[in-house]
Image 1: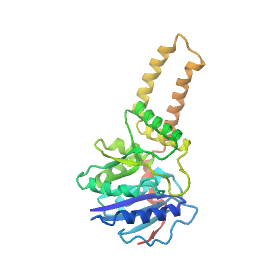
Image 2: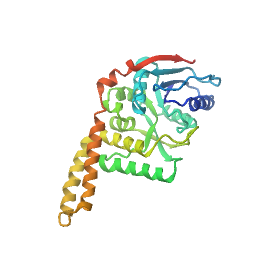
Image 3: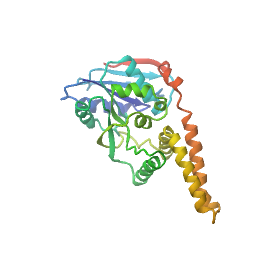
Image 4: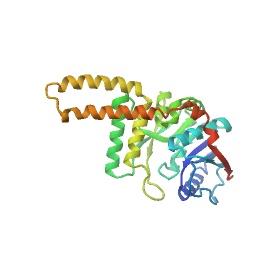
Length: 289
């Protein structure tokens, strides 16, 4: 079977080099063909390096993009490139900074051999960030569940069958939110435990603002459900507070309206025309192996 690891990267050459070395080490005993497609999201620093520990990797390509379009769109473009240009059975998107652990690739591959066309997600069972960030992450999951009815415990680190990749590149939500889109199109996903590790170099790049945007982007994929639930909440809440309405008791309604406005704005990112034309953003391709 043929597996392609899809790695979005931006200005993190040292982490990418170490990631490639660790992947090469982890797959040496696997009886599968494994290649890397790295999407360089218009880095301002040099990305390509000297790679010496790559004997177990079938091929490595670095796709250099003209314009930086962000993490989600980077992965979306990579999925489209792989589906249209490569022969494969599964795609494994993973971060290039070490937070997705290369040792878990073997588990994905072993499960995929028995999964048919079902895709596999790495369900986060442990994170390495501080307690405040972990609390915010749990709140993000609660927020998503409360307003969409969807419990999403996974990120980009997944193992996607070719059938799922085809669905992903024909779903406009993929251009906005990877995990939201995957949850929308696939109802029968296989889950396996996954540990969120520490970055190889430097602090985590996931700030509170980025987490909030990430959370609202997922919620925006299910905006019809959100609007229905929000309308019901507003009606019941107004009935509840009508006898003691005040600025304080009105605050939840204000926050809810801000959230609805935010997800409506984020939903505008779902542009199928841009997604279909995303490969025109490729500047050139470096074939490392």
